[in-house]
Image (cartoon, rainbow, N blue to C red; front, side):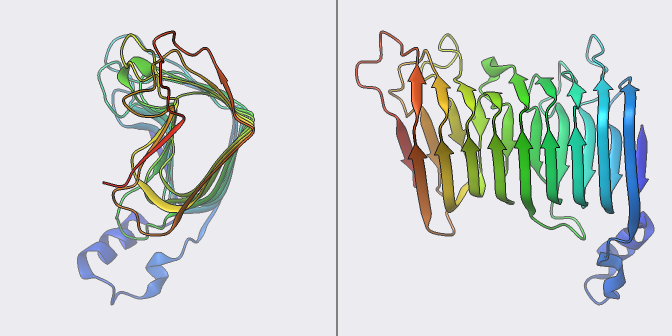
Length: 276
């Protein structure tokens, strides 16, 4: 396991212990550039294989994260935490742990201005997780674009391969193939994507888009193809849970193509929004 610190972990610990009166220098990302290219990773036993914290520029290309058999693989491949200006190109991670519920090949935490291009991801949980914690120096995840990527997840567990949490603002998936999408936060877009629904033998609804922490803003689903074999009766093919909503919500759906309806879908629902 390797950790790259752009901000001293000692400074972060001091700030956490003493509160906001510590000089603001502790919040400042002063780290240089991190470049990782043409690397094959053999996962350690637990923890993130590569953890990058507090850098102003991160570039990752042609990284293969291998899968170990059994339960001793790392639950997180690469974690980007509290960074700004991140480029990831051609990342090819496999599923991490067969026993862990947080097997994230790529975890973007409290980082901004992130571009992920291409790559083929597989996980038994979320392929790309966008979120973070409330630790010192943490900011919302903002301005994140994932383009021309394939994200395959074990949808028998009901989780989307593309995932964003409530602290996300301004996330775009474009020209991607997704096996379930779980968009949360605010101002999220799915553009020109093919999205596969949950398998009906495990989830009769067959939902393809299901966000559980929608806070408001504009949710755009434009020119997407949703593939579902479910009945879409318990809730819609697109289901948003907004019981913690903080801002006005606009759901903008345009040029939607739906394929492979179940013969049991007598009254299918396209969109349901749960306001609690």
